[in-house]
Amino acid sequence: PFWLKLAAAALIALSAPPETMKKLVTPKIATKVSGKVVGKASSVKQTIAQNVQQGWAPYPEPGGKAGEIQYGCTDARPKTCPYRLRLERDLVNSYYWSGNFCQDFVFFVANWHPIISIVFCHPNHPWTKCTRLHMLVVSVACTMVPSAFITAHFYGSEFDEAVRFLLIFTCVTVPDLVYGVVLYQLAIGKTRCFGHWLARCWAAARYCCTLIMIIFVCMSTGVCYLILHTRNLQLGPLFQPILEGRLISAVIWFPIWLVLPCQLGYLSLWNYEHNKAQTEAQKAAQRQQTSSATDAGADEETVDAPDTELG
Image (cartoon, rainbow, N blue to C red; front, side, top):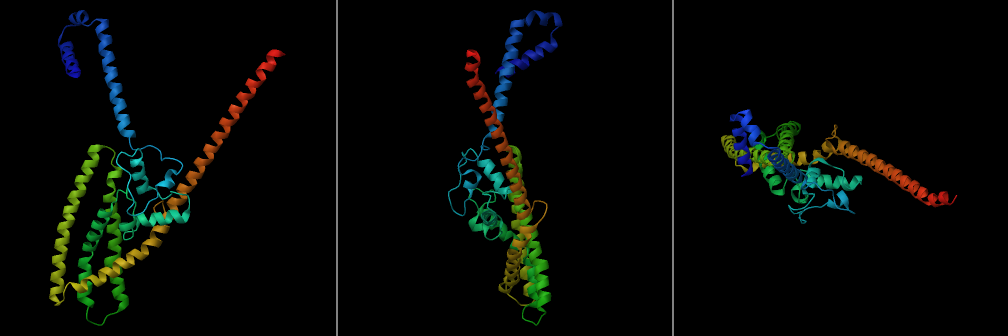
């Protein structure tokens, strides 16, 4: 291969005396070798640029970004789609799609809500339906042990409803919200890993975490059985506080993710992207007006030129 020959020539050059190298390396040979090196470097650079740009093409018109709003079981964009990576990145990081506040909020709920999104999320979302269902099972398993304590303490006896609600909210709902955010970031981490090998390393880490979670689910189930067995209870009553905690988290998800600050909640990030889009549209209109004025001035000079010659 050419690179092997070049390496051998470099070794010979390092070991040979300067007088011998002056005789061996003529200007013609030096020009030929440098031309091949530059050609190889440019081809490698071009290949890298093509691999980086592949999948980041602009959205097709006339629909643009708004034309990519889809729900549920519609057909996904194929892997050969020229803007597939751009779409995946925007599905993870963007709330502004059509410019209509209500329509974008419905699309936001369909892609982000921990329960609704299992059915209605975008088919190309990196957080897939199977992953969402798996994460739901994991989050339920993480709240089984505190639910077992609540069931063992309150089931079949008189209790203060306010204390029970506070325990469910503190030990089931809040951990469920935290687990959901952490597992979500773990699921979409590949969209933030630039490079083939880095994405593979992230996928391997995710699979290791999944294996750990499966072991944790089995262990938590055994612990819950032991806790309930001490009170002569079956596993059935265990799911009542779990369902109540899931229902509470599913409801309070709406106000939390609507008003979160720092471009985390829907209002904050949607308004930021909306203002950014308006600014870019104004700049594009100004550039178009400047270009039109320049073209009109050039046309007037072209028309005035024959009159000047006649004068």
